Length: 252
Image (tube, rainbow, N blue to C red; front, side, top):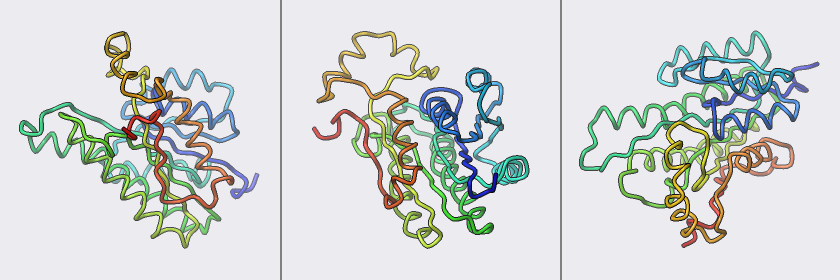
């Protein structure tokens, strides 16, 4: 199979939630999926699910430029040139703005914003250096980048910056046929450890639903389906856009 006919997707934060759902869907659609996590052991469950499909596992520290470059080189050597990048990995803390320490701020911004930028830069460098025909980047952001909420300032600011970065890079890399888009999910329950407590709280869920016009939560599978579409030929004329998946939450 020639490089041009290979479909290779690199998915960060693939252990659970949106990342795992995206890995499942892309693998079932004949992609070789390169899955990353800060601890490779966290990928055990998803790797077992994909045992009959094409995948590879990689430990990634988004704060290490060398680690980022090494992973791209490793995947190129073992599999080929990546043509789809899903920037899903992120971290968050709920802290009142007046109590945020510089270390807190740097931790969130370095992982969410810096990590997304330098993963995207490394992707574009490979596409351009090897004269690949096209590439697609999908940044997973959040409706916290659009709507304001107390105690979420660091996370919301980092995701809002990614929304604008999506537009800036879409313009800059269009000459190389690299499309850059984003997806901003709204309220969503996943199997992420941080969601275990709220996922079992009926009052919490009912309160969330009361604020959503469609009266339903988004699912990781819906986000994954949108990422697959944005990475496909059907979206060849779409770039610089952020798709909001929130049941109408941000319309109010």
